[in-house]
Length: 406
Image: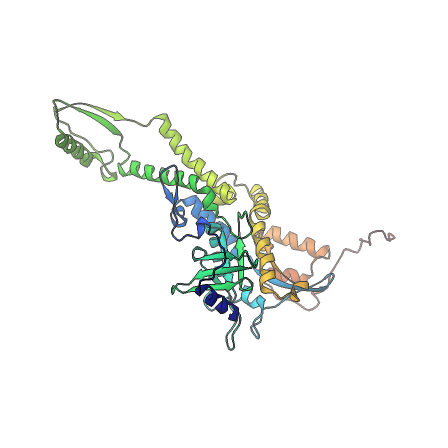
């Protein structure tokens, strides 16, 4: 904290490092698109597929426990139990990251900032006397990395809700980023998907106007005689008042002899293709986020294929996020000494939980192959341990590889 205060005073005196700012870091930024729609992080969530993808990714990461392990000797791995006397990193990640958030909320918020803004900043301020250690999320739209070309150091400039500007040193901030070209600034998924999102937002608007007319077709009305502008507008308004809107759908229009002809403009094949393009846009959006279609209630829905798709989703979509989180958290939240024997790991098995029958067969195979003790298997099912359940077992008819057969 002393270092960050010193840096704050230095910048205050006008000696600021050379920096560059990415577009995502501008608050309330709008991306203009060819469709004419301005795409922002919040307006993109009005597209159902984008909203669902953001929540699927953030929920799936948030529900996986981030656990701490110690391995001082080869083959010896012990899980670190959370404790708050004093507070260890396991307590912050599994019990209480700060005085307001649960671990689930912390991880979900981290993931949402990362996907929507391309950057996530988690601040772990130095512990002061009498205060507990805590993890705080800094708003990515008011935080930016500052690179000092002269010293090669990275600092983080952030603006708190109070309006106070603060400069934080690199070792206090865990920075996660995606789609980076320089290793310092990330780019959001929305940045690259903005044209597709813009098309879909435009399609929603057009569709809304269609339903606002009560699905009544537009048309061309021919009148007898010459009408001035005021008269034409009056006829049009009268017709729309009679038949426009959902409350007048399938209503009856009564026309007098002044109307010589009315030609409805019915749905053309291009309009049918428009409806199909809405579905194509949804597929593109899901592809940008890397979310399989079955999670959006589309595509194949058979259990076997979905289970395989879930494995592929974990390895190709989620794992890059998880690995970066694990590596960055270890470097930022563990001392250099601890990094030799302590590591952090998400429990990925939570995502792959299946039905009771499949899970029972999985645990049985692990127990009989000596990979897991009965008590470890019971712990997965939230069952208490029993005496004698900490031994490893293998079948009697199995021998050591390369050994003599009985």
